[in-house]
Image (tube, rainbow, N blue to C red; front, side):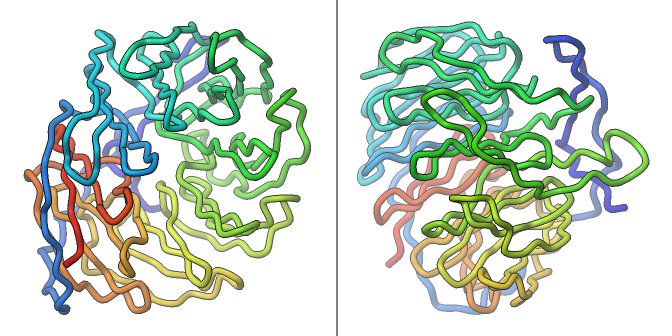
Length: 375
């Protein structure tokens, strides 16, 4: 069995409290050397900013020409991606465990004290204590804030007041991943990953509309049987492609849950895609491409193995991944050929690179926020 990445942790659930259950596996093999760049694609660094060190699994949140980012120590900032200037910055004075979620008006994070914090215009609007830790960015949509906690509960709050509206919970499994799970809107549905299942909830009431099994349990112990659906999914119309942790990649109809195809895959991060293709990173750093409609393999790129790759992003007719040494790599989406790379501050690229208008934005472990533009 392939060893897990060094940062992966899992947790045992005891009642509503979370206890550490397992630590990192063996050290990873030596990273592959930087590969030869084979293209003429030019990328220019436009600006840099700073948010503070990031050691938890935080994701950036994009809205128009602005991007919200956070640090583990509690800094939350909204940045104009065209200039790199800070729109507002707020110190929550509490370590952030999950975030950032937002709708352009309200932004939400979860602290390590199990507190949901919602911010508007750079000021705290309200706070609510949660039933358990959360590693998934809150979803802010339709005037509500939705939270997926480690006890497999989804809770909805009124976005303006913080009033709790409903809670829906699936029976607990012994372990959950200490990383972001799947929580997203699709039309008038709220989609959530419950273990290896994708569930559709009514966002107004929390009622379960349907469930689909994506990843099945396997292995001889609880750690090997973890199959949580992970953030981020790739959506094109009603086509939704998701990853079950270290088990499978699958594409399905997001309106009714019917699975179009599923393939075994040994990755722990989400996916990027377009109408024709789907891309993902395996836990050993191989970058894979599949045909979106059928799941047929298209290509494999092994030149970045063991470099601790980030979530992938399709951007400016290229596929983008960051690595643990702060390099941002640009691949040809049709072939996997490595066309260009650019450095940041030497620390790992965290979460997922994001596209903000014409600007590519990445956040590093050291807290650097960098904006790039294709020439």
